[in-house]
Image (cartoon, rainbow, N blue to C red; front, side, top):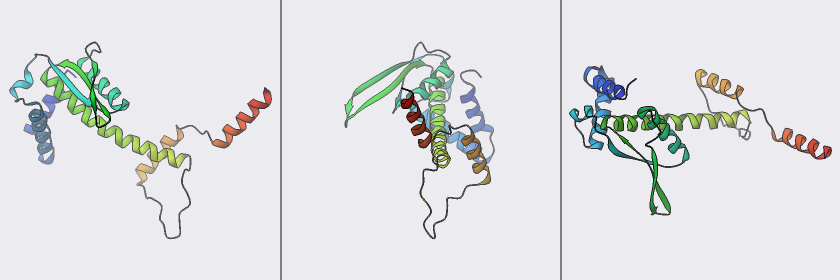
Amino acid sequence: MNKKDLLRKLKALAEKGVGGEKINARKKLEALMQKNGITEDELDEETAIECLFNISGIRERRLLMQIIYKILDSKSNIYIRSDHVRNGRRKRWIGCRATVAQKIEIEFLFDFYKRLYKREEEFFFDTFIQKHELFGRLKEGEEPKSLSKEMAMKMVALMKGMSDETPLRQITEQSAASKRQ
C-alpha cells in the first residue's frame, strides 16, 4: 500500500460508502483536515513539512515511531523532542518530515492503533488475572462477570500461551538453589 492509499480510501469511502460507513468516513476525513487546516486539494501535495505528534509514555512513543516508520519507510528523519515541564510533567513529542497526506495517515493510524492497543491491553490484564487466579471468592448473592462464548474462547487461547509460573514454584526453586550452594 503506498503512502496515500489510506487517505484515498477514506476519501473514497466518504464519497461512495453506504449509510453509517459513509458518514463516519466523511466525519473522520473532515476532522483530520480541519485539525491540520488543509483542504482536500492539499492532500495530493508532495511537499514535506515538519510534523510534531504529542505522546505520553513509552508505549505511545514506540507505537507512533513504528507507524511513522511504516508510512515513511524510513527511520532516518524521526526525532524525539521534549518541552519544558508543565504541571510537573515534561511534554514529549515525536517529530518527522512528511507530506500533509502522510501526516494525516500517521494521525489516523496512531489514533486507531492507540485505542486498539488500550482495549487489547485491558483484555490481556483481565486474562492475566484469570490465569493466575488473582481474585477472592464471590460473596453470597454476587454473580461472576459474564463473558460471551467468543471472548471466553479468546481468553482461554491467550492463557495457553502465558507462563505457568506460580509463587510456590519460585519458592521451591529458590530453596533448591540455596541448598546446592
